[in-house]
Amino acid sequence: GIPFLETSAKNSLKVEDCFISLARDVMQRIGDITDTHVGNADLTKAPAQESSGCC
Image: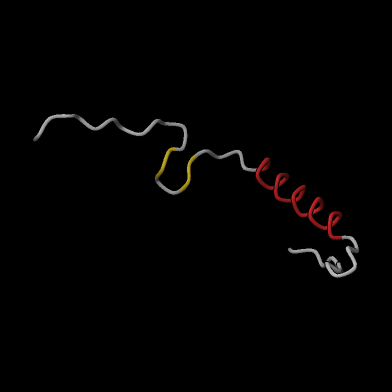
């Protein structure tokens, strides 16, 4: 879930701590992704090169 973090931009209270905490959580979740296949797309393959011919 999403954590509740009380901050105040007006008073600069815990804004940086909140950002660092959320960024750390996002990076952890990205690091937990080990499957390189999303749906039918293989994320490890380079895109196919288009030919320069007219047909």
